[in-house]
Image (cartoon, rainbow, N blue to C red):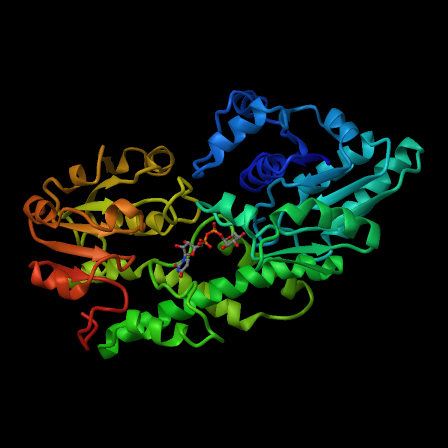
Length: 449
Ligand code: UDX
């Protein structure tokens, strides 16, 4: 099938590459010339395991093409995926200007039947706006060409994007007629594993599904973070509690890991956007209000544990003269993405309290420099951060942090103090090794200290 994917961000690039991988002819379009030139050479703008070689292979095999020429891509393709960004506007609503600009551009150049697919995360009712923008452009040209608009939300996770796309739990397709549904089903049939399925529905429900899914996952995380904080107060172990509840098949094991709060390009933005949609309809989403509030607070928990360790409160200068090592800056492992990362809140707060910081992340150092500049020190490796440090803070769960050389850590730190925001180690073993180890929901001291 001939496909165009408009927008070469996370979703667009992964979708284009995976569709090419299954034999389709895919043209990926972006207005950023430099980005397209790099992509043609196989240089990709993001860190995503497995993506670069897959792009290179499909470019070499002449199934995947990159261009800035939208009219040419539209002319050659039957299915046009819109995968451009929908950043949060000031009021929390999704900013649709890029989506609608693409829709208009399509309408201004299409000359035969097209299926236009909304792949970007867009609020309920956007497909109708896309439909209207294309119709308006066609009318201005004085032509009457048939087209259909489909909603096909993407559920991929950064760091596991290829796997999520190639082996989806489900594919949601919102379409208003059988013809488009059949074409979309054909396009996705190579990705259907035994457990996966295509769920078809009307366009508005498909748009709503994406927001509801992300809001539900964010809710689970905030819920578990609150349970973890309570575990610390009552002397329970949240890991045991998690296993205990997760084995109930109605609850399940995934997305129950407490930590430093959720970040990334989706959850914070999508939770805000669905709340905004509700407000527009005169409704307040009370659960999500709390989910956001808890998440904001959770980003401060690790610093509270540090302050607690030194028996001091959060007044400016409280940590003056203290120097900390930080492991992990990206919002989660296997990505260089720092958008809404808890590390930003944690590090800024430590700086406000007067501490100095030396940080390391396996992939996000360049992104971190853009955010923190010279306000912190950067190390070439995880152990290099430890020199002269009073303690170590772990913010991201990278695999290389999971089984470190504890002796080396102990010898390098001025005091064997670790505040772990991702529960990477066993509190018992850490205690045996002589560490003062603070983590999330497993501190086991009824006072919460
Ligand atoms: C998310 C959704 O999972 C995906 O379906 C959607 O398409 C885009 O948004 P992503 O943002 O890549 O994907 O990351 P995800 O793995 O979902 O993690 C989001 C945040 O939640 C991270 O900050 C992560 O550390 C945190 N998290 C996740 C937890 O704190 N605990 C968990 O149990 C799971």
